[in-house]
Structures are given as C-alpha cells and as structure tokens.
Image (cartoon, rainbow, N blue to C red):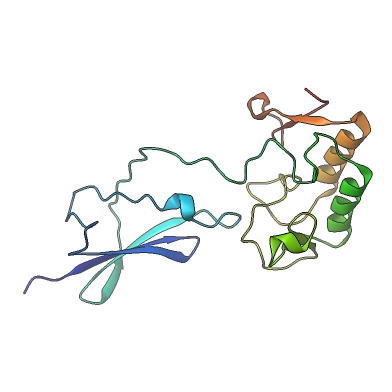
Length: 182
C-alpha cells in the first residue's frame, strides 16, 4: 500500500491550501506545484509562509523545499496616498493630523471590524485586530508595531506644515513619501 501525501500551505498561521495526492494540483515528488494563492493572503500580519506535509496522518516539516517565484503581485498596502490623507489630495489637513495624534495618545491603533465604520478603517487603542493594511505612519522598525511613535508623528506634522507630500518610493525615504507636492 502506497501512502498518500498531503501538503498544507499556511500564511501567517492561516491555512491557505491543502494539496493532496490525487488532486489536480499534486504533481508528485520533485515536480513543481503551482501555488497562486499568496495574492489572496491576509496583509498586516507576519508574512511567514510555511509548508507542512503529512503521510498517512503523521505531520512533518519539509526541510528541503525549493520555491521559485515566477511573478509577483503588487502589495495592496502600498499606495501613492498616505493613510492619513483620507481625501487623497496629497495634503495632510488638520483633522487628518488630529486623527493620527489620537492614535499616538491612545497607545496604538487597530483595524476596524468594518472598515467603512470609521473615517480611515482604524480604531484607536491597542488591540489584536491587525488583519488590514498598517497605517503609513507606522513605519519604524522591521514591520508595523501598530502604534505611532513620536518620530513617526513628527514626520506627519512635517507634511502638514509644508503643505503636502508626494509618493516617492525610489528616493529611499523612511516611509516612501517626500515632503511637498510633486
């Protein structure tokens, strides 16, 4: 009796796909399996992709796995408009600035359960709801920490005082935006 194999693909802990021997997507050992599922993965959390295989119900981690990236999907969290710029006019207005100050003063922010329930899709205060795109003002460190640091707030105040900003991902700025209207 030949064992049946199953491959679980997880992204940020969430099961995205289960590929079993006999499925159309299963091609056997050492044959490429096309996984066009990362584009549908949740954003805003850890970006760990893990593979776990099982044979006849016994799970084991795959140690020798080769992944070839054939194409990339644009990051839906990357935008030419800053998250604080709710009317997308490349200017940070007083109300927009005050909203980020609210996040700073409340010790953090999180995703609103219904994005349309708030003006920007976020709720003030620390929490575990991180299934949406992080705020563009939350850029210090290796990833979002779901809080606004003083330096990050001062950067937004700079855009407010100068009268605008523009998207400049190729200019190696700390947040992908440059002061002033382009």
